[in-house]
Length: 429
Image (cartoon, rainbow, N blue to C red):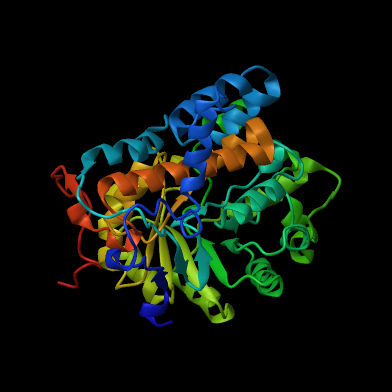
């Protein structure tokens, strides 16, 4: 794929082309509409149902879900990080190393945050990360997520452990832009079957998950149970003939969990497996879970068209590197292919910082999953609308009209001692 075709920014008109005082262009910039809606509500004495910052929203969601046993199980799953949760905390804290430089006397009334990434148009450089097992929250959870993403013009990545099959999403949510995640299993025939299914359901981008060679140490899985052991997240697998043939007792939910664990605790994947996926997949291929320049180099050598920097939200490795800290190293080893960032995004300022440091787009998972847990479709929309409005305002205040204008000069960054190798692959000497 031509590197120039992977990312396209929608340029805003030059300032001289429009008169002063025209107001905000909500047609080109629908992200500003949520801010206007909330402001008008405040004028009329109407308060939003949920907090409008993601940090406060998370606090309120924890309070609401803690009221009963099922809600506590949902919280345990969504916040079930590896070890003592220090990687998840590091993802958040990494943004504190950077501050945004505000530029004034710049025209920012005409803002356009749209991008086209790997041929997929998006209202903003924000994607919904794949989250499996959400039918623990509600049976058709991912239909609500897919609808919310489609209605906000964002791309949702369909997890193979979603509550519904890709065929069901196609039938019930036509018109949305979706990518498909492939979890590499120990059964190559299952991998091939999933690839074929993604192609058959019209997906043009395949995201290969590399950060779960085995399931990490998550004490919440033992303390509260693993959703997959109770049959959650099974829809796509149960309707796959290769996986279904492995089930000794299809009616036993625990049997799904046993087979799932057997297939995804193998730990034997190598670059050859990724190259095999590349040979079978005719569309765009992304890899998710890269944290080093070396692995970025290996992924591009195996044929990856793009990379998602991710540590699985801190759910795999305790005391792991923050994704924002790994970003520059991955970009260095990616040889010019687009790099996206997953992990730690909780505000518009976080989005700006990640984009300024070289990410072409960012992903969120936990925030929208919490929105789903407390208020279904409306909760997901609330999270997305508020985050996008926050990002739009943050960009405007900082003096930027488009993500294409961002770069390291937009930030003051605290000097750090690099802890990761900057060479894209080991020296041969």
